[in-house]
Image (tube, rainbow over all chains, first blue to last red):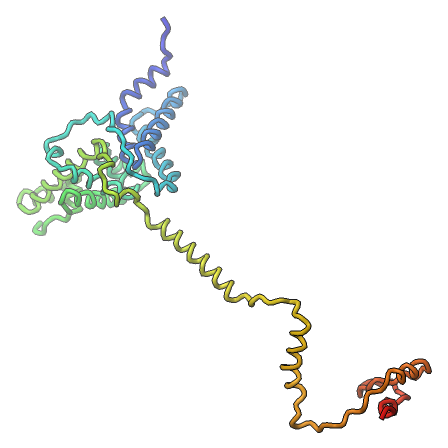
Length: 174
Length: 173
């Protein structure tokens, strides 16, 4: 019986554990769904290569998050000329939206959901990253600051501004 | 703590950076407690929505199709205006095109109309009788005899001239 190499099996295990989260991060940080999908593939390619070498990171979660952030940043920088792209393309529902809607989310109208997404897209790249890492990924302020190369004060400021902007979508406000 | 908590403080409390004083205030101040609960609810909803798939973009109105960012557009307009202005400035400052080879008739006409009246005013200068033209044969004879009539001498020229032109000029009269 042919056995799967250890590195490949290790990679597949890591892929199953982190694929949904990485794809969600890419989808949040990149506007275009095609770019998000390609960025996620790029991250997993780097993960595969990293699994081949001996010096592997101790914690794959933060490593994958950092690689995803850097990949999305590179995508945003190289896509500045795409600002005239038509955004009316239909894109398919994400395969990884495994979380069911909470009663609160279900009560939201479609317009409110669209407003939240629109306001999220209107945030600066830095604010998006801070909000996603802090509120979606659940990282601490210190961890976010270390990953993004910011001070804790800057992280709090970016998070506060992001929250203020996003709360306007549902009629709230700080 | 009598003053209500600031919005930023409520967010810090929500992120787990609360203090005993903040907690005590939330227990005593109804307004702050209400605002705090509302913040928790909003953050939960926002997080949940963002973890879903983005809404379909086909339902967007046409006004959102082309989301033109104003910076590149403003830069492009500024470049176009600068090019147009520069081109117009160059066109204004450039001399009008004219023919370098003016016709002979144009030159004579110009000399007759413009130059003659400016240089030869007939109101002041004494009109002297012009000597009659000398025949060419006279000059030819003088040249053959080696006595080429002098041109009019300038004051600063030192060379002398033995032959006076006046006799030659008056000979024909």
